[in-house]
Length: 79
Image 1 (cartoon, rainbow, N blue to C red):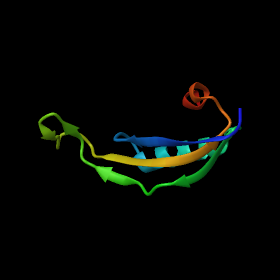
Image 2 (cartoon, rainbow, N blue to C red):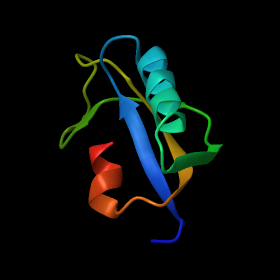
Image 3 (tube, rainbow, N blue to C red):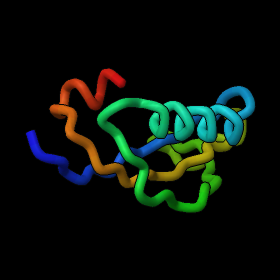
């Protein structure tokens, strides 16, 4: 399979969010068959429910990375 580009969404609202996301990006960089070619800034957003903002939940930190990969979609997701 030739290399293709994919965009992966990363984020969460528990623990040291920034550290966890940076660790995930490092893990992607160290995975055979994956090259991280770009990453977005991290953006903080409120937790939402159908009723609107839920102040009782921690805010989310989200971002995306663009990768070039030779992995099949299911294998990329597993990594």
